[in-house]
Image (tube, rainbow, N blue to C red):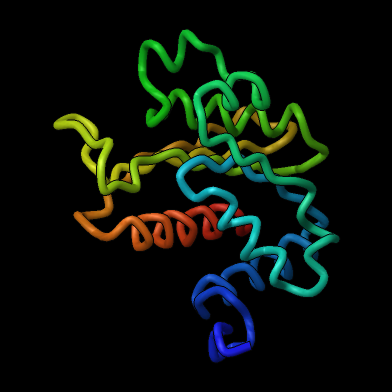
Length: 170
């Protein structure tokens, strides 16, 4: 197929390199992972499943693009979305916790953001992406907001996927 990248896959090398580390390092640590993706639309799960042996590590992925799906599939409270919005630390944290509760994974990462070109506001411009990581059996809270300067939609999604993969490393 001529549409495949030079590495023989359908995704950029940096994503595949990180995904390979996620699979190898989590396998060595005896951990499984799950994802709750919004603006990345399953890109992180796709990168992981490009790696042979990923079934030993990836438990499941939730693509919750709409607010309704975040509520229905992950149990995010509508009050959180109403008060803070879907692109907020509170929502990302609730997404990660919901993925943890609805999976067998040891660690979950959530991603929600505004990839553009539309949808941004003065307070949350295009390129705003929030992430959260939840670990089973701990009260650790890791949540952050990043702003990827005005970039194309594809570049915002790509950079968000890179951050999410990094968050999945033990």
